[in-house]
Image (cartoon, rainbow, N blue to C red; front, side, top):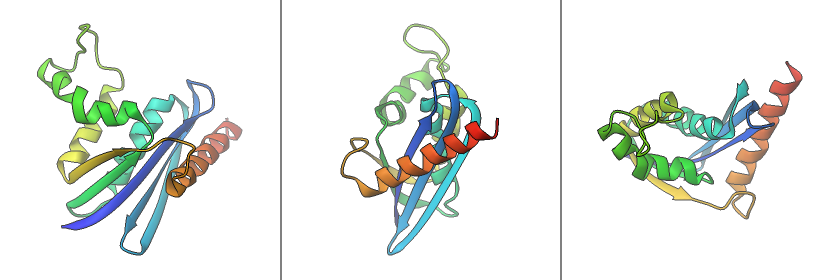
Length: 147
């Protein structure tokens, strides 16, 4: 299995508001940058989309280290999702899981790979995380200009 590192980030101008997501894939010496945007979204949705799209682009099963600055994404996919699935996608407060569509999509992508989740502090000394922040913020700004 190929070993890949996936670095992700999301951004939103307002919450909700125009949003952007970005991902960087690293395999050996190769690097691929991806990004996209949505006109009306939230920061958490953009964080989730970055991970989904980064995993989705991989054509074969890989060992993937996903590096995220979102504790929401990391905790959601590694801990909370098991209870949500057991309880039929409701929270412990018996309310529907927020962003359920994206959690299901992320769960589907994670099932294709062997994934390790790593949290990094945002806006710190992680060059690829900082680059993802630039790309996601730029995509969000571009989306706001197009409205």
